[in-house]
Structures are given as C-alpha cells and as structure tokens.
Amino acid sequence: MSAPKLQLGWIGLEAAPAELAPSHFGSKASELAGMAALGLPVPPAFVLPTTFCGPILSGDEKAQAVLRSGLAEGVERLEAATGRKFGDARAPLFVSVRSGAEQSMPGMLETVLDVGMNAVSVHGLIRATGNPRLAFDSWRRFIQSYAEVVGGMEIAPFDQALARMIQSEGVAHEGELDPEALERLVAEFLVLAEDAAPPPDPLEQLFGAARAVYLSWNSPRAETYRRLNGLGHLLGTAVAVQTMVFGNAGGASGSGVAFSRDPATGAKALYADFLFDAQGEDVVSGRRTPIDAIRLRDRLPEAAGRLAESAEMLEKARRDMQDIEFTIEDGKLFLLQTRSAKRTPRAALRIAVDLVAEGMIDRAEALRRVAMIDPAEVGETSFVEGAPAVARAIVAAPGVACGRACFTSAQAEEMVRRGEKAVLIRRDTSTEDVAGFAVADGVLTAIGGRTSHAAVVARQMGKVCLVGCAGLTVDADERGATIGGQALRQGDWIALDGTSGDVTLGRRAIAFEIAPESKIILAWRKENAIGSLR
Image 1 (cartoon, rainbow, N blue to C red):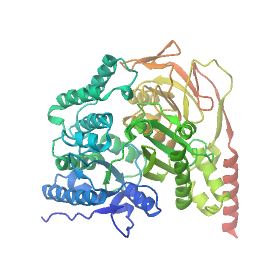
Image 2: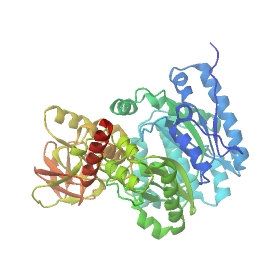
Image 3: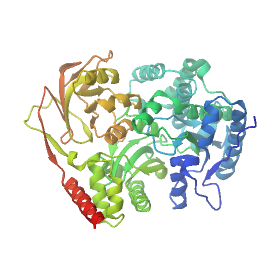
Image 4: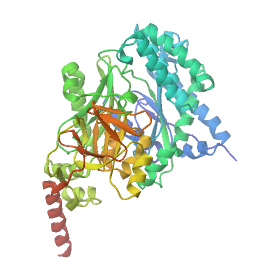
C-alpha cells in the first residue's frame, strides 16, 4: 500500500495567500487564512489536513513517516518567515499545535502549546526576551501539557505540585511565583512526568503533539459531542501548527476570548473575558476567573481598541456574530481564531432580527438561521416568588433553573432518568462534563469565566449557567458542597437566577413569557407561509 499524500496549507507564509477549504483544512485554519487576508494580525502557521486524521487513527506507519517529513517542511517555512530556529540557544522558535474540524467542536479536541521548549531553548528565550519568568513558566506548562495530552498522564499530580509550590512560596496564585520557583517547578515536573515527559528534540515533540491532536478525534468527549450535535458525518480534524505568541509575558500581556455580541442575550456589545499574564488554555479551561472588556480597556486601551475594531470587521465580513480567541503579547494584539459563535436560542433570535435591521442579511436568511428553533418556546423565565440568596455568581447564560443538586455528570444523568430535574454543580467545568450539560437544567461553578469552553457549550444547549461563584466550595468526594456557609447535599433543591446571578436554596416555581424577538420571527414565518401560497 502506497503512503498517503500530505498537502500542507499555509497561513501568512505565501506572497499570494490561498483560501483553505474547511472540508480539507478545518474551519479554524480556513478562518485564520481569511483573517490574514483581511490584514488582521495572525501569527504565521501551516496546517495538516483532515484527510490525514483517518490514517493516523488507524496506526498507518507510512502515514506517520509522511507526517514527520511534512512537519519538518512546515517548520523550515516558519523558521524562514520568523528568523527563528526550532530549539535554538539564541533566537528559538516555539509553536502551538491546535485541532480544527470542518465544523467547530469547542474544547472537545486537544491542544499543545509551547512546543519547542527544552534545556537549550529555554535559555534562548531568556536571551531573546530578558524575561526568565516567561521562559520557565512556559516550560513548566509545556511539560504538563505534553505529559497529559501525548503521554496520557492525569493532571492531578501536576496540579498538586503547583499547589505545594504556591503554598511554600507564600503567594496567592501561580502568577506570583518568581523565576527561581518556576525553575524548581520545571525540575519537579520533569521527574513527575518520567516516561511521559517531552523528548529534548523539538521535531520529536512536534510529531508527538500533532499525532496526539489527531488521536483526540476519538476521545469519549469528542464522540459524545458529535453524537449530541449530529456531526457524525465529519471525517476528522485538521492540525494547525502556529508560531507561539506569549500571553504570559508580563503585565502588558494576556489571553482572552471575545464575542462581537453578547452570546447570552444577543445584545450588540463586545463581550470579552481576559486573563492578564496567562495563556489561552487558562481562559477556556474555566480554572480561573477572568476580567471583562471594560477592565481590559482600562488597562490596555490601545490593544482593546484594536480588538473591538477587529471584531466589528470580522462580523461584517462573515455577516454573523463572531467568537474570537486572542492573545496580547507586550501590548500587541494577535488573533488566533474566529468562528460563528455559539449562542442561546434567545440570542439567536435577537441576532437574526438585528442583522436584518442592520442590512447584513435579509429575512429569508434570518429565517433559515433560526429554522431549528421554536420561537414559541423561547422567552423570559423568572421565579414566581422571591427568595433570599445564599450566594451570587457571574451570569454566563440567562434564564432561571431549579432542580436537585448533582455534583457529577453521572449523578445528573441518573437524576433525570428518575424523572427529576437536575442542576450540575462543579468546582470548575470541563468539556468532559458535556453529557451532564445535556441533561441538566442549569450549571453552577465555583470558578471560571463566561467564555470558558464549558460555558460556551452550556449556552449552545440553552442551559442556565452561572460561573465564578465565590461562596461555593465543592467537597472533594463530589457528594456535596458548602454554599453561603450552608451545607448542600446531593439531591437537595437549588435554584439559579440567570438575570441577577443569585443562587437560592429550596424548590421554586418558574413563570414564562414569550420574548419580543420570538413574536417578530413568528410574524415573519407567517408572512413567508402566506407568500408561498400566492
């Protein structure tokens, strides 16, 4: 059997950029190429096609050999474009390795950042930037990510080692660890990783990361997401290898996710979550609670202004609300992804109506976009009677929900099988919880932000979602919690208010009123039906 062909896609590496077909190079790479063509700041990248996913999943040795040669070719082009060299002691190149199917699957596939880190390049990064904290922070991140994604290790040993270091150094969080402490953490992580640690050779690291991203196509969470969203026809994921930009480079750096409109309500306003001195996985993982667009503008007004301009440009070019991942490195904005944003059913109706009013789409297109939504079931929910709040959280998806407390997806699924309503309560949500989101009426987390992958999925499913609840502490055995100083056990009634962010205990009745945009869509459908009969 002959070896499969490997056609690479290029982003920012050609004098005359070519369009990248989503079916062949994934929607993420297609949109990156589109952003580059618009003149937006996109780090250069090359892309491995979706057609290579099947051969890698099947363990085809010839395909793996072709993959190695393709990666080497791509790295050579990145080195020429950036003036940096993989593994270099003075001007090192580092890359991210990201997934990208034909249709978006937020957070369901794997990513490996900081590829190229080793004992030589870490000092090269220090020489190039004068920032030893950035270098050792990025190296410890890479060791953990590689061991988890490529080596199959559990994340817990690394999190425990990090927690011990934070405690021993007497600081509040990892962002306050100094370079010396991070260098010691690197040494500890290398010991923890053992056989799962990244090899010293950057090209071997890159091969392992690319192969692991392809293999994540068949992970349980990815398969569950495709089943729930009718995506069984997709062939596989592409893999984008992109020049790293560092959001963890200091106080004028950070990573975030922005929506060109509010994905919960549909309101026309930039909606962003941002973490200073952080990489992208910190934001979308939901493990830290970020700041919003207003505070970003206060701290970094020039970058925030460029972000708002870019979001407006992309929305006009795509004629739809956009979900944008971005990084700011030393005050300079870089765009890493855009896509049509997941949104609540109510936001979908409002955005469709507003885009018609703004002249971006016509009524026929608006009706096509919301064809799967029953407007009569979309509206404003509220509690019939008031109740004292025991805690308050950040609203990630609106509405109200009341159900029995569940602390794992399995508990939520069992509760719903028994005919009860469930509220899924977690310290932080991950995309592993997608099955729990599907059955629960609401989701509540102790930490995390509005644009974490989990919050995005909850909104898409139309679930009430509150995040970053400071008054919530979930028990280690996942059988109970403390909220507002009160004990909460599995099966207790709890209520979430997605307007105020209030959390209350006990069972509450819910009222429903149809939304104004629902009435408009219903009227348009009626007019359309009458017109088709003439």
